[in-house]
Image (cartoon, rainbow, N blue to C red; front, side, top):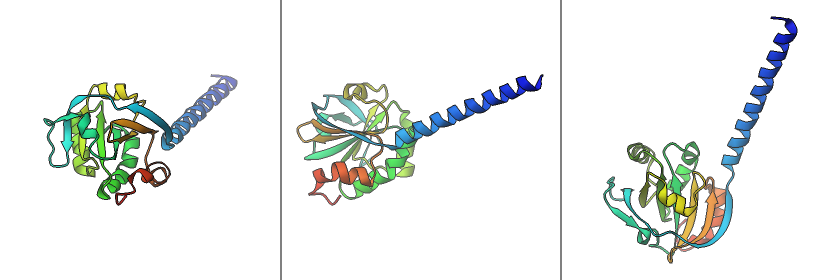
Length: 184
């Protein structure tokens, strides 16, 4: 192989690697940011089964909209065991739960056994987890990806939709004021 052909090939490979690394970095940065949109729409009516609830790990309990509207405000967090970025917010959600913040999980397009194992090993921040293996409820909600979190009031109205990770900053800036009566 001629030197000029080899040099061009090496240059092409290096450029391709730079483009791929740039794309990976941009994608990772995008996943770390959280965008918030104000919403004024009803949480969809649904009937599903619980993946787990706060008392036990059993998927036979029926879950409906009434389970999502038990408090003046609650969070509905869309997550999956295969979602790496969901693991980033898991610890913070667990801390919120310990402070009394009501959080319902929506397990999106996941293997139930794997999802249960994640909750057993990493802790369960949810009062109940809705099983959505085909993503039907998520589709009705307008889920774009995981994680997403919805602020839902007692009337079943979605107040806010958060795309991305909930952390201390997002909590203080966007959600804490709704839970003033709670220790969070």
